[in-house]
Image (tube, rainbow, N blue to C red; front, side, top):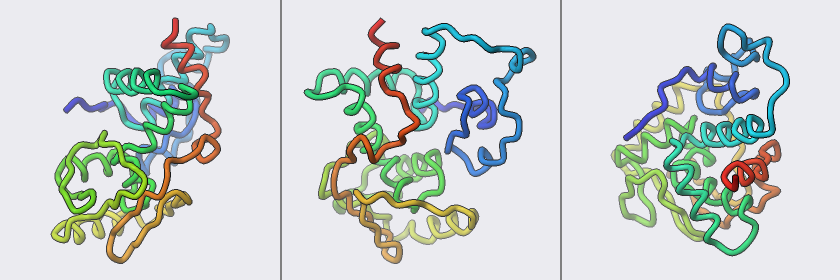
Length: 202
């Protein structure tokens, strides 16, 4: 499985915002783009702005370019507003649902828990991070994995998840009910998905 091993600080600095991909990212001090002349970069072309927005969202959700493009292509084939559908597909990924629930403290951690077989959907083990959850699905941590998840949570005591209203979480039993697909207003308002659509529509 391909992984982005670049420093989380560099990824956040390049995106121009703190990406919620690691507990360390919140301690970022230097907000200039990485590189020797990062602070001197000012005016950006329209293409550069579109690319930066696409990269920011892609890195936020922890996808490689091929995976992100595949998700975009799926969004295009569906009826409705392509940008909104793209963000909904990203939000409905199994690893993202696990992260949003607070059972995992970062998206990379959630992805690893899924790929290592610690997660079940409707009572069946699912080890595909991109698995699309559907309203009514139940995500649960396997019984033998609950101690591990609790240990990971205790290792990051400052993590305070904001569980969205479209999820219902039983923290004691480590069960998450996916109630509904989030609406656009429920998803990060700092994302400008129109720029991503423009980028891929060139």
